[in-house]
Amino acid sequence: MPYSPDLAAILTEGARFEADGIAYVIERLPVGTVVVPTGEITACDPLTCASGAEPFTATIAPGRYPLTAWVAVVSQDGGAPDHRTAALALTVNDQPAVRWEMALNEGQDVGVLDADGYFGYPVDAGVGTLADLSAVAILADWDYDQLEDVYIPAQIPPGPAPIDGIVDEATGANVITVASGWGDGVYPTFVGYAADGTVCGFVTDFLVIPTL
Image 1 (cartoon, rainbow, N blue to C red):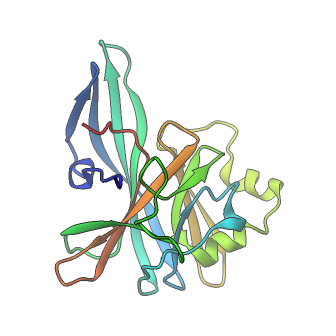
Image 2 (cartoon, rainbow, N blue to C red; image 1 turned 90 degrees about the vertical axis):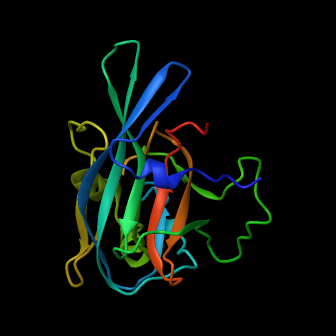
C-alpha cells in the first residue's frame, strides 16, 4: 500500500502528536527563498548525491519561492526537548492543497513501489534540500573543499540547521540544506495540487512523525 502521511496535520503549526509516550509538537521555521531558474524541481542530499539527482515530472514556472522547515519538538518523560526536521516545504503559491500525490521522477510508477510504500531519495550526509535541478547540478561539480566551506560549518547549529548557499552568481540559483529528520535514510517527497489542478507546493516528509 502506498505510504500516505497526514501532511495537512504535519504542516500545521502547533499540531501535536503522541505515540509510545513521546510527544511531537510542530513549529514552523522559514529558512529562505529558493531561486528557481528552470522550474525543474528536485529533492536530494546535495552533498553526496547531487550527481544522481533527477527532476520531478511535475514542474513549475521559474521564479523565487519560499522554503519552510516544519520542525518537530520531540519530548519524552520531562527530558530536554529535541528539535528534528519533520518536513521541508517549497511553497509555489498561496492556494491550499486539496490533494497530495507522490512526487515522481521520469519512469517511476506508483503502482510499483518497494516494501516501504514510497519512492524517496537517499541521505548520507544528514541533510536534504528542495531546489532547482540546475543548481544541484552545479554542486555535483564542486570538490569537497568547496562543499565544506559553504555547507559544513565547524559548529553545526541546532536543527533544522538551515544553510543557504548561492551556487550560480549569474542566475542567483541557490541550494538551501536542512538537517534531515533523524539523519540518514530514504525520504519521500509529495506534490500538492490546488483545486484548479495547479501545483501549489512540494513537501519532503522526513518520517519523524509516526504514522498513527
